[in-house]
Image 1 (cartoon, each protein chain N blue to C red):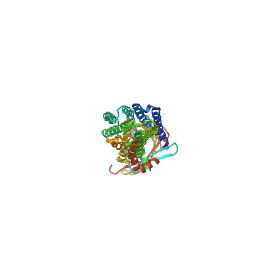
Image 2: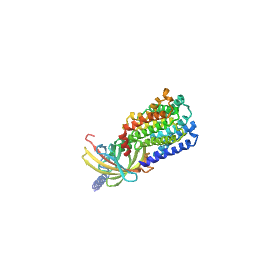
Image 3: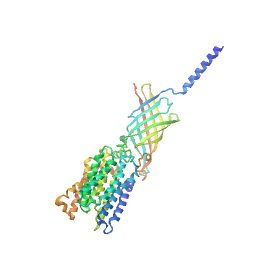
Image 4: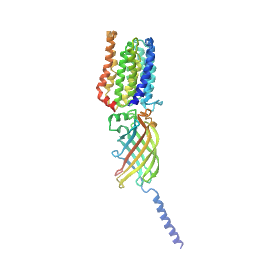
Amino acid sequence: MLEPIFWSVLLPGLCAGVLVACGLLPRGLSGLRVWRRSVIALALGGAAAGSFLGSVGMPSWPPAQKWHAVFALVLAFIAIGILDAWPKRGDWASRALLGLGAGALTWWLLALPGQTPMAAASGVVVCVWLISMLDGQRASVAMPIGGWAAATAVSLLTLVTGSTSLALMAGAIAVVCGVLIVIGAVPGRVVSGGGAMLGGCLAVLALAAMAYDYGSVPTWSWMLAMAGFPLASLFEIGRLGQWEHISGTITRSLLLLAPPIVSVWMNFEQIRESLSA
Amino acid sequence: MFKFLVAGVLVVSSFVAVEDAADTPVAPVETWELDTVHSMALFRVQHVGAGQFWGRFNDVTGSVDWPRDDSVAPELDVSIAIESVDTGNEKLDRHLKSPDFFNGREFETATFRSTGAERVGDRQWRVRGDMTMLGQTRPVTAELEVTGVRGNPVQAKAGWEAIFTIKRSEFGMNWGVENGALGDEVKIIVGLEGNIEPGR
């Protein structure tokens, strides 16, 4: 298992990490909003695509297997992620359009067994829109923390289903989020961005893992893995949304962390067995 | 005298005709329905360049067209249910059924259909055919042995064992091939038992 983890998690994750480090660490660069958000979207998508190439190789077109379309979707989501760099805080209409675009791509490209394209597309629309909105609200390290937690939970749950390639893709996204958290600890560096990319990728990976699962992971576990984002969104309503201090960041981070942790904890025994298999 | 000569020629030619008949198939080709309880497929692949890892498929169905005297090659039409994969470890079974390997949700069966054969020994054949796995059909050959036949004209059982060696990457099953986690070459041993049931 170490070789696949190296080629499909660490290598693509760390290469993408180097990209964000080069793009955000030089003084002043991370303050350029569109630049920062574009670089993070590119890094997240690049890590997921690199992971796929590391474990599956270059897929044919049209895809020989339905789930291979995940690779094409990730590449398409990079474009969505870069477009997501422009809308300003609170611009829900532009983000809704991006969500609909991501959903349309999913509907067109991804025909998973046992799922209607419309159901899969609806899930992607909601995730892209919601996570992009939340990400656009403020420049805070809470978002990479939430992304890391959700990606790790999706990765571990996917591992239980047996779809290891998909689990490694989510793992590579988690590595990039981890690098963002570290960069965020450097004074003056801003690390928010890539919300649409993160939402689209995690939704597609979770949907694909569910489609190929033989009933080993209950649906609520997947919902819980992603539930940090809607939970943290509640914290943006009314006066709570104006809470900007470190205590606000910690509270938002805890809200983003708690549901994925509960999801992993509820499936811990299965995850432990999968890691040892 | 001429009548005796004609009669003699007729008698001799009738003996020749009987000898010729002995070279042609005596037993008819019968369709043997596979006994799903006593048919299975084993597979073997190298793990991390070290040990040989074994697994099996428990659900093997299909038929074999074959005459009991083995005068014609067995013609196999075999289907393996991917969901019946069994390694003795539930987690490994799940991984094998996943998109990384057999992708059982999309491709419920792997199949083999004979297209030809040549005799290589007593009750031994080299069978050519098309194997379909992950939606990809590739020509493969198998070393087949007729392991036995027992019974009477109305109720009988016959057995065959076919050994295939394939490269799984040719079917699009690439997990672990590049990084050496799992070998590319897979040996598949299919043990088949067919029935001729009364009234069929």
